[in-house]
Length: 312
Image (cartoon, rainbow, N blue to C red):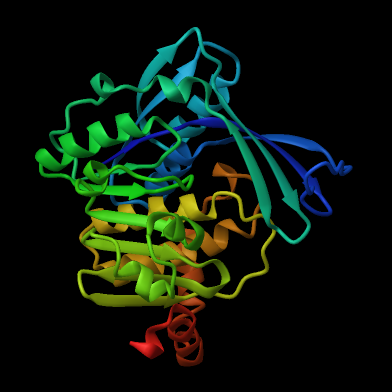
């Protein structure tokens, strides 16, 4: 059983030809709202991956924005532990999606900042705790230390990028970051492989967008090249990866197996609009993987070179 502790936001999404630069006004297309938030997205991805019952600890305001968030999570069969914050608005995110599928996101945390150490439910029966950084870092640290003491595997998606206290990293078993977040955590810039070796965490997974992903598990590296798709919207691709990864690790898969499935789920999430609305089901991911059965050696070599492993 997986416990996700984190944020839930209502996403306000506008598509535009490009993401505005500072001071620039861009005329967009229609405004659409989608259930989102890194925590909620990852909980939905975990639940849709199948095989591992998923629960989520979240905080919501007493407003209309909370209703679609609850409905989306419950429809994905995520069991909720909800903290009500009547004096705070439910979290919101404002997202511009460019025609090339890239996005820019601004988050108003609202009720997400209400989650405190005393809100963590009993941990008996859970195998993994999955968290992100859209709730207070002090809360994340408290949850991580309690989960580690309780024998759970602690998985942290260190996003949005920020400096992390040593006591938090010491309580993390699996750290998931993108390349920019990795750079924010190390003292010496370098190749992806070199930066991975600077982090004192047993397992670190780095998503690399159209390149694929790489992990360092103790002293060994695991690589998974990207799968070919035509992107529509990259929103929640990283969250889909994280939730799917933890779901499959919770089923007892190896890191390499879980990364391959998570890579496929994240790719599929880029082919549809929105956050939770774009997260694929386990059946969709299985079908997609059957269409890509072989590891492309040329892509693998290119990924090794990109990460700097040719020099190691």
